[in-house]
Image 1 (spheres, one colour):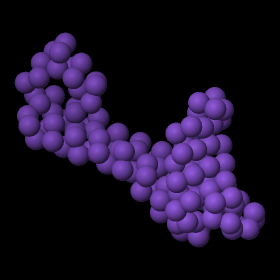
Image 2: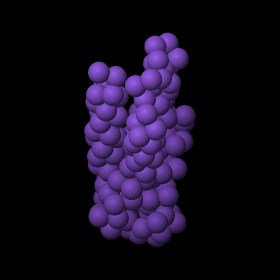
Image 3: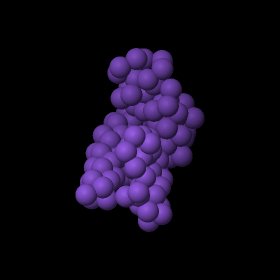
Image 4: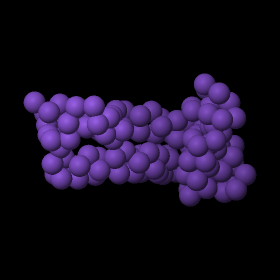
Length: 129
């Protein structure tokens, strides 16, 4: 959205109707929801509980700050592992399986967000031409 605002400031807001801003706003909301929903379904599919989902989400947020560069992947893994093993009391092997599911879900959410962002960019270029 910031790029669209910059384009409007430097060139013109004329090509952007209320429909454009509404569609882009909906796509931004989908970006944020996709993170949670893909993670939720990914962890749930491998038998995870709410503890694993919350742990994975917290790990996704904190991971990059605690472990720079690799924390974006290690954080959700450790978060789901701790959530399932410590708080939900599943076996260690099952907790590792759920944690691996959270990592797969993370990569699926990256792909999903990439597709949504490409749709936003294509719609932007379609509007200005």
